[in-house]
Length: 205
Image (cartoon, rainbow, N blue to C red):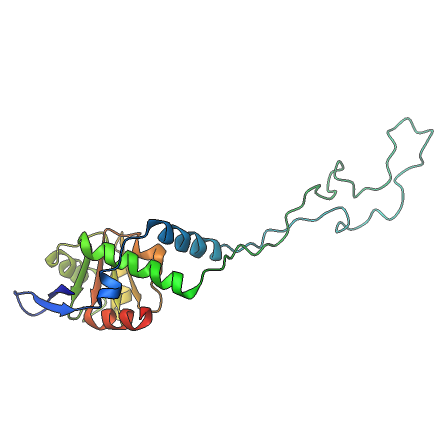
């Protein structure tokens, strides 16, 4: 399978050959949904915690005697009905991660990339760099490529590239190690360098 390759220093476009097993795979919505759900669940901290009546300090003795005070009987100040008492159904730290087989994850990523290439929302360029950390220059590069809402995928995120894009709305830059189902479907276009494309094929092979 061949994809259009934009030349950064030429007006004419070329071609780049890609793997059919990745960029021509069948669209599997259920698998993509499962991979996306697993990724988002794994990113949850799950650190919420509250104290039950056994965790609250104090309450070792009965607040007042059982009878003769005119008040309702009470056995401990740690009771959930007391102010600063324990919580009845206290939240506990929880692991929300879901197991997803490596083969299923690779299949979901391949399905997403194939769909992006067919629409077409995947733009491949021979190289994409930033000579200086200037937002104005980066906006000019993106305008020349007719891109606005875009995720830039490179083999390595340089400091100039990061600083040039961080203040542009709906534009982000990641390397091939950081791509995942969530970021791939979160942008209108994906701009991927030829070197990054080769690394992605190697990771999903």
